[in-house]
Image 1 (cartoon, one colour):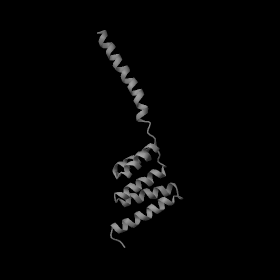
Image 2: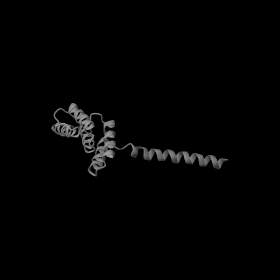
Image 3: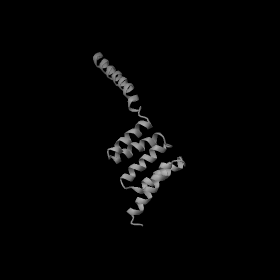
Image 4: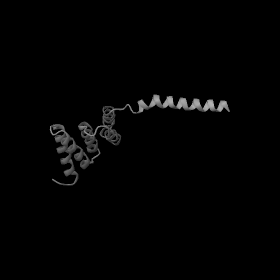
Length: 119
């Protein structure tokens, strides 16, 4: 009986130590790290994965202009122009001086018009 109690206590201790060691590693990812992952996925053409990373950045930092702009770029590459435009608009709302976001939005608007058959 004592052996079983000792084993159970040891298992609990090992589990708690494991949680204590690995929990900080799992939660250590910052918005910047997620953004960098997203950029990597986008550069390799994995736009859906990139969007997931940029979603995580926005969850961690809702005022991240670079996350909205980067996610807009990923949506644009997937030809989801309305979503891209929404993200560029959010970037501009957060940073009215973002020339990059204005430029990206104009390009996406042009592509959307072309997609919808407008001149």
